[in-house]
Length: 264
Image 1 (cartoon, rainbow, N blue to C red):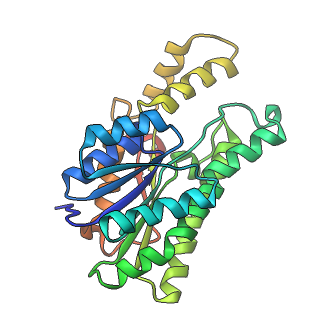
Image 2 (cartoon, helix red, strand yellow):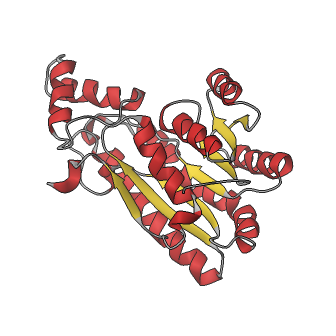
Image 3 (cartoon, rainbow, N blue to C red):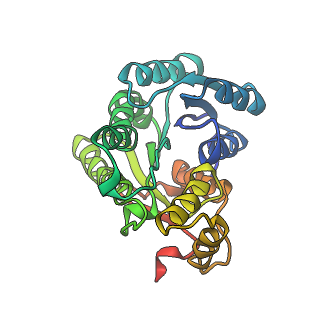
């Protein structure tokens, strides 16, 4: 189940958090992984820790040249690109009225432009590998529960992640129309124990006029009926499933992994 033997994945934002956890699980499932990130030292450390089936490349998701280099590395070193995980993301955690145009442009560039560029640049390689695969090649876009329901903390983050949700569905349809065997699905995490997750607690405390980060964390925890916050491996397992042939009949779908947060 959920095997990725012989497949090669490119993961953006893979030096830590959900990206690093996904890389580790994919390698355990038999894949080769390109660790793409702007954090060079951390990315190289992660790749070294994961062993010979992991290779780091510098990847600014807003730079088309970096994407081209990453795809070429995957094909050149491992022979193909079978899986793209658009994982890199940015969270500001402030009211939309308090964010400058430059800050919005940065948020949109990482969260939306990066997903578009990754998909655009990787399409040819994915179409080539998908054509000779029973279940096709795969793109997994990391959205958020904020891409399904509104976010009181950061409406602009919700706006960008909603864009990722619909871009996922649209590209799934687009590839189908073109006859490309590329499945595209999105993953929607709840609050996860990562650096970004911690940032949400700080943002909630600030927006409520307090420095009580523990209270903010408790509020977030109470919103998850399952009784705990998520950890990176929770999301990574869902990504690996979507990347595997076991999800061969899924495209244009949204996989919600949120501990029940959006069930209310």
